[in-house]
Image 1 (cartoon, rainbow, N blue to C red):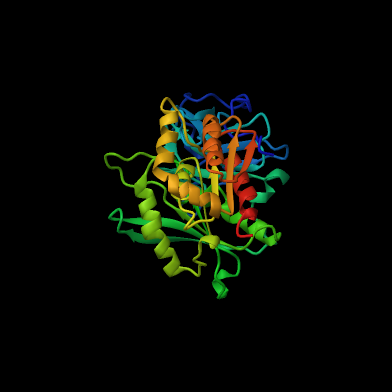
Image 2: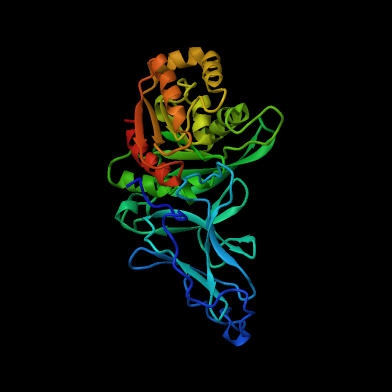
Amino acid sequence: MAVAAVALMAPAIGWAQPAAPAPGQGAPDQAASCRPQGMFAPPPSYKPVEQLADGRVTFRICAPEAQEVKVTSTDNADAIPMGFPPGTPYGLAMTRDASGLWSATTIKPVAADTYRFNFQVDGARVPNPMGTTWSEERMGINSTFETMGPEGAFQTYRREVPHGTVSEIEYWSESLGVKRRAHVYTPPGYMNGTTKYPVLYLVHGAGDSDDSWTSVGHAHYILDNLIAEGKAKPMIVIMPFGHTPDRPGTDLLNNNDFGNDMLKDLMPQVERSFRTLNTPQSRAMAGLSMGGAHTIRNGLTHSDLFRYIGIFSMGLGFGPDAQKQVTDYETANDAALKRGAKEFKLVYYAMGKEDFLYPTVAPTRGVLNKYGIAHVYEETPGGHTWINWRRYLADFAPRLFQ
């Protein structure tokens, strides 16, 4: 979704003990409020998220009338950022000072990486009111922050390297009968040149949106840094919206609607609008979790369109009907898999040992081996998290279009 980084809201991190007056003692005096006073008051002096010198992180929010405030995150040590299995996010209890400013500091350092979070104010989910970076989910929005350090440098903005451009496109899907959106990364130099580029179609997971691979996945920074170091070929990255309108007979993972939209509507739109190399040898498809399922069903079965495939934290054969899933997949795609064995230049498969989908590795690799599809398998520590997925992309991208 170095990898064994400590996730933001892990119970193992622990939290600092309250040092300010406990909540529920009445609203603070207005004159001492943390709110700016007057129409032209300067911005507040406090930082809503601050990485301390020792690597710990302090969170702050001004909420004088609130009775209970927490920091919440869907990124946690159990490593299910998308909400599987069901449950509420872990919360960090905050304490209020006399001005109505709530704060909390982690006891242990937070590993260098990028994290999503929000505040919970009297039970209501509140994005950081002073925030400037955000990540859209399938529904709703998260605030984000990044902790800095050498182990996270591969996915951070570096001022000394050339940078590509991230844009949004909207297009009409004849397959679905709705307007759709995708995010697009074009590499450094694209805007001022005439060069045509290979294309990676990169799909998000079930809890996310087409915004996620850049807002929290930092795919654009990962590519910028790899290209600057000469480790990856310059490429265009198309990040589709992985969800389709609900209708009877569809589900998140076995979803032909997504494939029809991507192959019949999005790809032609991209090839009309961008300077793309339009051969199978110049196209790749990859995805995490749900996006990995889309890739298994629409990329691994289409060597006529894609010669490079990446599957992150997903596989065939999960749950009580695991064997039936595998058999049905093989039956439906027998000819395509046989063709792929001859044509794919790379099939890359990555999974964390603590991932709840780890049991899908054996049946998935079994299918690949049965059809003689050569593949690279990367097994890492950690689970179903963006901490893993950013690193999978950084390992996968240099292997493309070689």
